[in-house]
Length: 288
Image 1 (cartoon, one colour):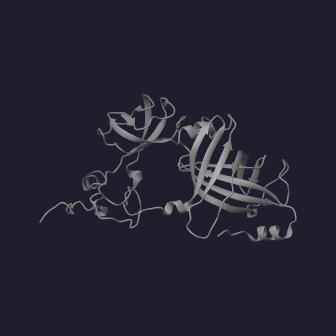
Image 2: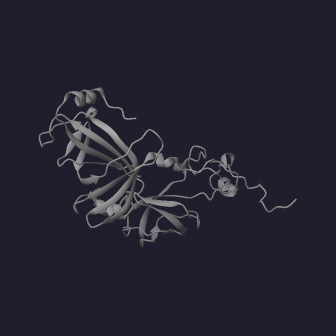
Image 3: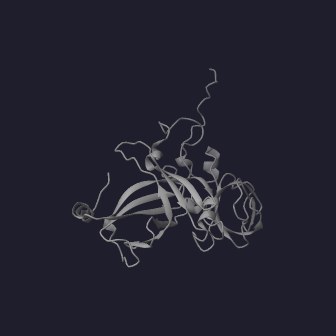
């Protein structure tokens, strides 16, 4: 249910003329928050600054049940528009930085037209219109086609969630698992290599990082995560190549995976008390 502020309610009732703009907040998986507006000038709403971006969207269907709806976006970007000092928006899309980003759409209603003289706009005039997860469908040239599925999509899970089978039913690091991932995350520096095999300053047991992940924290690959195929010595091999060749000195963090076995839970994470697999259940073919 949408909740409008009292100030916005009065504006909608009393004003004969309204000026409307869309406000988009895109939160990447690395925590970076990007703010854009459909207006053709920079808008300051509360303490947040929204920059113009050509975003076209279709209508939205909103109900009070758990139906999963989608909003379709067509984004036209300028080649010079950047995510940060090193990466343009299109480069970030190609590198996978927008994967599973969270999108908030607010509708801004203003009693005054949006001009270069528009000052700070009270955030009470903004109404949360849509919340969902971003999926890039196509990107090329200066155009990005994407959909934003509503958060009810997260309810599309198997039921019951707890099944009796040998692997652990928990996810590494979640509330039920209880493993503090900060204790196992290690930081390193690239010393060379290719887009698929990164030479690093780390010294870890061979295959320790297999099926884990690596995420760069600096350089042109900053914020991009890849699954690790294996590691040997200081070399880390990823399943999917990075979009850019890592530069010497680029920093990253790595996290080992859990194969959900009792042995891994005990020896790697010392977390056997929270293990919720059932490896001793007889297989269906066992005869007695």
